[in-house]
Image (tube, rainbow, N blue to C red; front, side, top):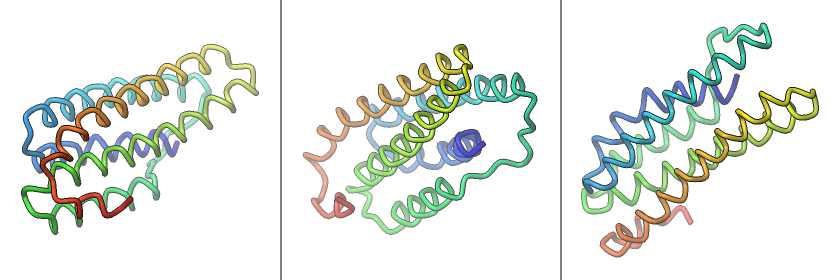
Length: 153
């Protein structure tokens, strides 16, 4: 449920995060990520329904904190550094999601749910690809950003 809640929260936040970005390639990448997220939500809803589990009102406390931090950093950053802030925040979100999927995949495997394991692993691969795309964009954008934009490291 945490993964599902995190995906919902990311879907809600992605339009404002995309709006904060200025580089056209970054905006396009974020829009593609939102489309991917929507597909993952459908997949997660189906997997949860197959387990006869209720979604309830999912919320991810970890993702909530990450998105609050992101909003504050976007608000407090210079426009010239905002793309770097957006990339850093998105990379953190990707890491959070990959960890959640890895855990869910392990549990599905231990429970003998082969189809669930495969579908969750597909989502893991999608997240890894998104993180790789962000890393490539980061190299381009970092060359033009104030080093302080990467102060989180």
